[in-house]
Structures are given as C-alpha cells and as structure tokens.
Image (cartoon, rainbow, N blue to C red; front, side, top):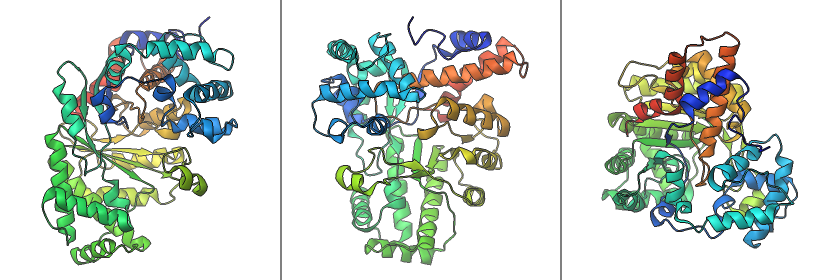
Length: 467
C-alpha cells in the first residue's frame, strides 16, 4: 500500500469531499519564494537529483546534521551521490517532521515514486530520478508548468537590474508569470561598508546624490517605481523584531550621515532609522497599491563557527520572542495609518505564542477598500509550515479575523519541487474545515464550503495582489 494515497491527511468524509471537489485542482499563486530568476530564465537542466533537491535546502541540512552526517556530505564537496545517500539514510529519522511528508509528496508528484525512500532503496531511486531529469519537463520551467503555477514572486534586492525577469517575460511559450518582489533589507539592517556600498549603488542607479535622509527615501521610491514598471506588486521585509520610534528630519539626516561614515548606530538610533525607512517605503507602496509583507521573529546565524565557515542561510537560525510586540506593532501600523500611507499588509510572525497578539493588532487597522481584509495574518512560515503550525495559524485567523478572506499559502522556498507544499497546506486546511463540519461547528453547506475553499486556495490571492 502506497504511503501517499489520494486521501493522505484527510481523516473525515467532509474533508475528502471538500479537497477533491474544490481544492486539489486549483492553480498556485506563489507570492513569496526564493527561486532564482536567473535559473528560470536560463532553464538549464539539473545534473542530478541532489542538485535539484538538496542544494540550498537548509531544512534538510539541519536534519542531516542532527543525524550525524558529516558536513562534507551536506554543504561540502562530497560527490552528489554520497549526499543523496546521506539524505536517504537520514529520512527514516524524520518521522513526525514535515520533511518526511514533503519528501514523499515530491517523489510521488514529480517522479511517480510511491515507495518510501530509505537507506536500502536509495540507489534505485537515485537512478530513476536522474533518468527523468533528462526530460524537458524536468527543467526549471518544466517543473513550474507541471506544478500548475500561475504566478511566482521572487525575492529581489532594490539594486537588481531585473534583466532575468525581462528574459522570462519574453518567453511567450512559458505560461507562468514571474514577477519581482522588492526586498530592501539592506536599507534597514546593513551597517558599515555594506551600507556604504548599498547607498553608493543606489545613487548610481538613480542618478541622484544621496546626502540627506530625504534623498535616501527618494532613491528607494525610485527603485520601487522601477520594480513596478517590471510587474512588481509586492515588497517584503525580514526583521528580527518589529519596533517603532519617531524621529524628525534633522535627526534622520544625522543618522544617515553617521551610517555613511561606517559608524554603528546605538540601539535606539537604529530603531528610529528603521522606523523612518519603513514609513517612507510604506507610503511608496500605498501609492502604487502594492502589498507590504513583513516577516519577523527569526534570530539568524546563531552558530558563529558555522557562519564563519559557510556563511548565512545554512540552517543555523531559530525563532525568537519579542515581549513588547503588541505595543511596537500597533505603534508602527498606527504611524503609517496616521500618514494615510498604510498599504495592504501581510504580517508573518515566527513565534506562535504571539499569534493572537499579531492577529488582533491587524484587526485594528482593517478598512474598506478595493480588497477585502487588506490587513492579513500571514500563513505559517519556516518553523511553522508544519501541520501543527498551519492549524494554529488558521484557527487564530478564524478566531481574530475572517478566514473566508485569507490569501493562503506560499512556499518560501528555493526549490523548484517545493510546490507540493501547497497541496500539503490544502489537505491540512480541508481536513480542518471538514472536522468543523463533522463536529457541527459549521454547516455542511457545499456552496459555502466551495466558496471558502476556492477563496483560500486561489481566488483571494488573485484578487488581493491584482497582478
């Protein structure tokens, strides 16, 4: 009996009916991911399943380290076949971890493999996957097309030329829209030489000298408009904490000058500068009817030795908690709202203990407009894109807001075979709704359940982002 059957994770009859009738066939709008637009544009085939599956996947890397795999077979120079074997031998230990589910969903969906991968059959599965990778439908564009993806939003620096997005758009045979997302973390967090370089490049790109904070804000808006002309409709910001302190123009000019001399700001100065940058950007987004995403609560690069050896994004990050998030988040959103510059906003918090705090804060700033629920409590991400994390996020949203208006799931992934995570979410969502139906908590009204399911799986994202 195959592990991933058609009713995988669907534990009640209502869930099975809702999923198969309304959810399974919906297109995917992946409005936040880390796919490389160059890889999509160039559409080069993958040499091995290791290149497709393990390269850059810090989720798998963490599991392999926990299982005693030497770094040489994780991020090192070991042959691709040895890295795949190490992952296969790790997988049995992943029981209870979503990696176990994701792996087998991906093997079935893309490769037609229904047996569970392990240390005994890895060589046969290695050979079978590598044979299939030679086919055109297993190129980056082929995998995206197979996955029924309508829109992809990549993550891009304000200084990016977006040339690969132009190349993708020029391919009329490729049915998926691939759009840039403005990610100005360098404007918010960079210090020392990194910030000086960022300001220098921004000045070159905009053709304007940057000496005052107003110049800096204008340069950022110039790049927002550049992204807008290239199809961009979202921004994203990765923050450790959400904070807010006001500052006047004179103070901000002094803080910019200090950063441009390579000096480190004091903690309160950093908050004032970041707050002002976020306020300026929020206005730029609002004027273009963009959506502003803020991901917060990740404490990054905690293992100094590994960071010095391997760099960032290698699986040494964790969630962190912020005790005063209610005050700080409300203050930041209120400052934007008072300036009439609060755009459509999606907040993703990494600490699930703060779910209700964040969702209730968002409800303070809902307003009528072109879309329903412009203030969105974002899907469970990173350490929360598990069954438990998704159920917590969905139930919090239902408690504090309007589940009917939720914009749904994203991949937040660097992998071209991560799209079964949307199916994973849909199964979890349908099972939760089916459970409510079974328990008599919501009516067994298929017209209502159809609207709810299709909205959350596809329609809301389509209408919210208006690509």
